Length: 356
Ligand SMILES: Cc1cc2nc3c(=O)[nH]c(=O)nc-3n(C[C@H](O)[C@H](O)[C@H](O)COP(=O)(O)OP(=O)(O)OC[C@H]3O[C@@H](n4cnc5c(N)ncnc54)[C@H](O)[C@@H]3O)c2cc1C
Image (cartoon, rainbow, N blue to C red; front, side, top):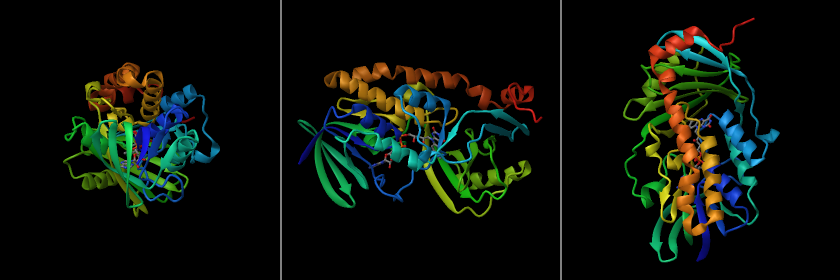
């Protein structure tokens, strides 16, 4: 049975950043159920693919720049806010980079050292505690494969199996949302990003993101509510603001875990670590998660490289800054999500773009 020092489940921005930052130092296995080594992939990560300023700063801190091949279009600088509660629309200048999320993930994986072993189209099933760490069962293209590992890292996203199974986190302390995204032909030539706030639909938000191949309309609805009905109702209400969406050619769903306090972040225990959205790192105000994923992966790598025996304490310390960041975002919460305060902010129009 093959042995690895570190086995990473999930090769999204968190897992790929951890694997890249570990270099060739340990025997590392990177596993993902997606076919990240060939196109098209069997599974697609449901995401808007906007690289926010925090994620741009993270990339700058790693000293890496985005290649042209991962960019999508349009690259817009206009961000429209549609407040359905107060019937106000304002446009602001924002600096997001529009990427193709699948190409972005493939590119991050390609930056890993050649010594990192990768198993794609491979699903993580379970782990059993053994003396030297864990015996891990994987399903490689449906065929059972067992390996042993000293440390196991859950980088497997919001619905983390590693977290549920190895850390006994069965119930989600974080607030859970069902996110639906639909892709439409961009017949009306929408070329700005849009955020929609509407209490009748959700206490989070909905969004419009134009892409080269079409335009995405997405929404995040609290678990327990009828997500499909509310998502469709939001589309109907948007007609008033000039957005007409019918006949989607693609539809995808995903969970979003929304931390309402940084105490809900779970970094792991013993020889099990969590990074990225599996640990609960995501912006509570915008659901921006790519920066937290890349940064937490890199912080865990630094901790493992510094002292493999004591890595959990180091990781806890290094990632404090990410928890503080979530607390700061929580302070902005009423400005965005309290409709009365939002009305004052939007009516003032501070920083808004005026048509000239
Ligand atoms: C609809 C939607 C839109 C979003 N839009 C944005 C955006 O525009 N910008 C932004 O910054 N953030 C966005 N986010 C959040 C962002 O996508 C996540 O926070 C980010 O991808 C987290 O990275 P990660 O590496 O932690 O997890 P993920 O990107 O979810 O990666 C987890 C990986 O684990 C793999 N995996 C899961 N289970 C298993 C298993 N059992 N076996 C093997 N592999 C497994 C998956 O295939 C996946 O590759 C959005 C989220 C949603 C749901």
